[in-house]
Length: 167
Image (cartoon, rainbow, N blue to C red; front, side):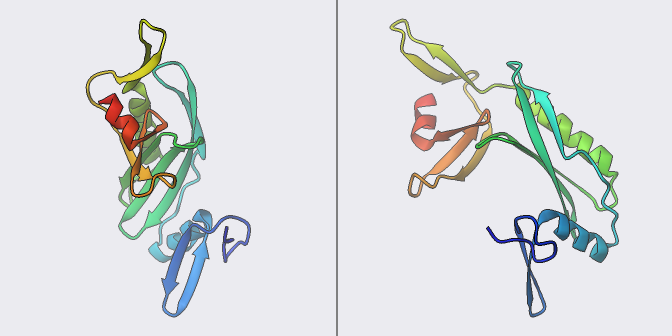
């Protein structure tokens, strides 16, 4: 894990090439740099929030904001492996609190619908099925399945084969 060139404290997730220099920055230092370049003030907002999903399970999301020349990007990532992820984009001059409110509302809506339900056959064998013959999720790299993706549905990772059985 490379440390931030600016603060030396956090993991450097962003790598910039500026003329002949290479900079590796954490998200906070990157935003500070971009705020100066873009003449935008980044507001202090919630760093995390928790919501109940459709089954009453409390899910906690970490909020990450990034400034880009084309706008503000906010992402809420659940604090577990393969958890839910939601994002919104806004203009540089948009009200950042309203953008965060949009992100929270999108997250509420996203965790409200459950796409997969667990059931039990009469024989007692458990199985999973789609609740309404469709699902929404995201595709990620699966380090354990060469050349095959990992599909994240309802905040859980499914292999390509498992998704095939759901269908």
